[in-house]
Length: 247
Ligand code: PEP
Image 1 (spheres, rainbow, N blue to C red):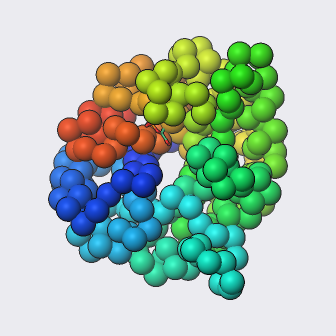
Image 2 (cartoon, protein in one colour):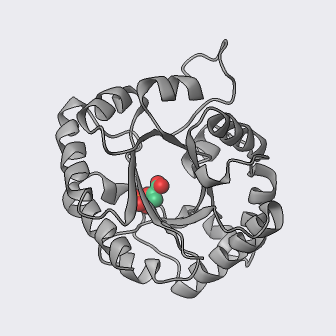
């Protein structure tokens, strides 16, 4: 079953008030591609202003705490994200798994909290370069999925982002055959876990650009992309959306 392509931008720790104009430019241009779901995950402090500036474009967070509320200094709950106007969030990005020591169990709890609150969740998995080079990429990613997939029925709002850590922000991209193998394995895992209704989209992430997007979107079981650096400017992001629309 072909799923509607989904292209989400991850602005990471980039974006000030002045950049709302860029978000607006992206939102305006994305309207030309109704066959693609487009979203931007911005810093938490920009979410409310972004949703006011671009009411038609889904705006998301980049992380969420698994607790509803409590003594968690500096953290943001799913309800807070929704309250600010967000409709989605990333969970388990490798930069958080690494720098914040997030475990698969944390990521699972975060995904469940987000989905239970009505948000869509993009759950990230991916292997290190060392694991890729020693032949353990598929086993590692499947083990991450086993331990971090949510126990939920809200599958229409769940996406998986396969993001090899060594491809993020480096300009390096796996071969088409490597992407195909991993996405096929992830699809198999999702079918095994949730049944083969195929509703969960599998995004590829890691140095996606206008110049390589078409080739990546042509791969079976690639249902879109999670885009970091190239999502910061409309002129870089829109060619990726255009490639998704054409693919
Ligand atoms: C990311 O961090 O999710 C990402 C895919 O980054 P980039 O596109 O810059 O590699």
